[in-house]
Each structure stands twice: as structure tokens, then as C-alpha cells.
Image 1 (spheres, rainbow, N blue to C red):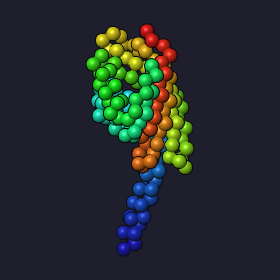
Image 2: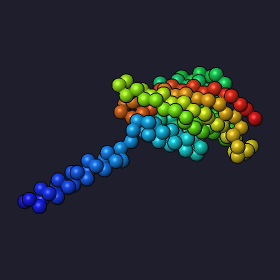
Image 3: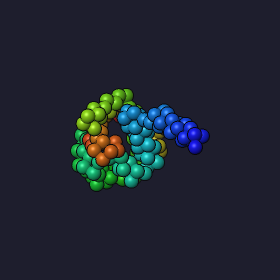
Image 4: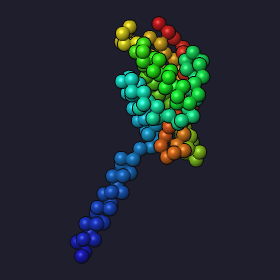
Length: 150
């Protein structure tokens, strides 16, 4: 009986230790979602891209066009796929306000036309508002500003 209790105690200690060791901070969760979103954009997986957004997401594109909701954004992405354009975001900063379940992300975005060049053909700055209302971080709004076009 003592041996069973000891084994159970060791097992519980291992569970507690490894869960703390492998748990992600909010910033790490957002960074991981951003990485997955970039991968989905590059592979033209529109459904996957949209899964990281709230249904009522607001997006201001690099040219100032405001897109309201996933449906409008989906159409915009699909129209971009026809030209094979995709965008990659490079995060520079993530700030989390835990008490409200909100986060701010900012960085640089690059647009690629694979049939024109392997290098970025358009780029700029971006910011995103994240929410954890559903228990999972999702983008609630995002703003892109074009700074350079080649």
C-alpha cells in the first residue's frame, strides 16, 4: 500500500512539473497562432486563416479598405489568391492585458507575389487586437498600413 501511495505521489509530482514546464504564456500562445496563421496564408488555406478570427472581425487593409466580418475578409483573401498574393506578418511586440482578456500585437507585414519574385513586393506595418473571450486567443480587429510597394 505504501508503495502504491509513493508511486501515485511521484506520478502527480511529474504531472504538475511537466504541465508548468510546457505551459505557454499568453504571449507565446498568440505568437504560435500568428505562426500558424502565416503558414495558412502562405498555403492559401483560407478556412484555416479565418479560424483564427472572431466572426465580427474588423480589418483595415493596407490601402485603407475596411472589411467587416469574416465573410468580407474571405472574399478579399480569395480575390488575392487569384493573383497568388499572400501576406506574412512578423511580430515585433505583444502586450497582454490579462484581466480583460485582451492583447495588442504589432509588427511588419510583407506581401509576396510568387510568380513575380521570391522577395516581398509590398510591405508595411500592422497592429492587431486579440481577445480571449472564448477561452482561445482570436483576432478581433486588425489594421494594415502599406509603407512600400515595388
